[in-house]
Length: 226
Image 1: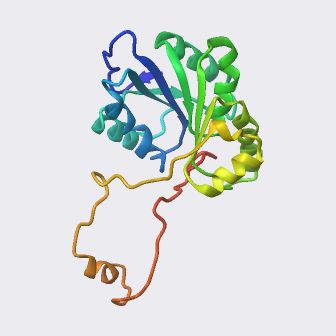
Image 2: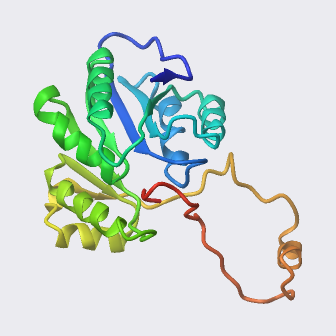
């Protein structure tokens, strides 16, 4: 376990929220939410930390360390070398006790499962954000089946699109615990770097052509969600 960015010296009565995620390499879409949240929540009575499970010695993780540091996001790393590691579960329990975590906010199938397993021992509230389900390997259908099993066991479930809202309702998540918060673009990080009229030419398309592109990609990662 390695604390990369110093933990905030917030008031003792602040409610600590632990954002948890499993990742390999440089991450993906959820980071724009996780790393940005702590700075906006300061002074509101909530203290937010990020806790990432990643393979030991993963060279791509240095990018995420830099992104977290740039946003002032406290980041805790946990070495996680297998699909289900009791050692990782014990380390996560220790982190929750050390930081008096009151809200566990998972962002993928594994941290959702770990949250469900730890809740009876630690008594925190369970929140998850469903970023989407994709299939990369023969194992991921099982992982996402586990994820869908955990969702109705959460106190609150956030989804980023209307289709995910429908799938979670069909999977048994009660309407009063399901919330749609659509994805957005952080204009501090993503902004136009040149005239709009030249955008098509930069990607070798004719002027005036109607074209579209995905707003958030799914880079290769460890059977995780986008």
